[in-house]
Image 1 (spheres, rainbow, N blue to C red):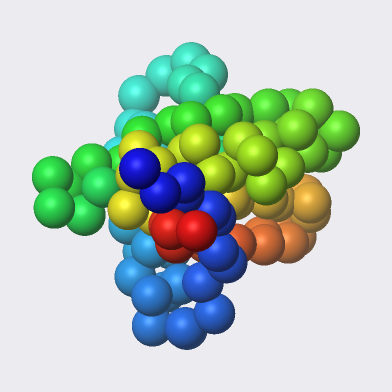
Image 2 (image 1 turned 180 degrees about the horizontal axis):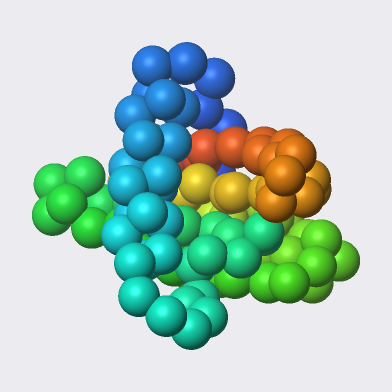
Length: 109
């Protein structure tokens, strides 16, 4: 069986679609009280478009803790399970957010 490799998405339309799904998911999580995994500044989401699922793969408080989830070996395992994997990094503040979005998909090697 071929091995999956994580390839970064460069098409703006696909990045925008995945970003909207994650924004909607974060907005839905934000309703209610208390901390919920998936609302942090550093989160990795898995998207399954056919089933309409958005799931939190990893949620970390710091960039140092989050960096292990952005390694190619970890991402390759994730894209084997999901249609797209999206990293959400907010290096700004509540008043001045600086959100960086990256999206990966599966390619077989």
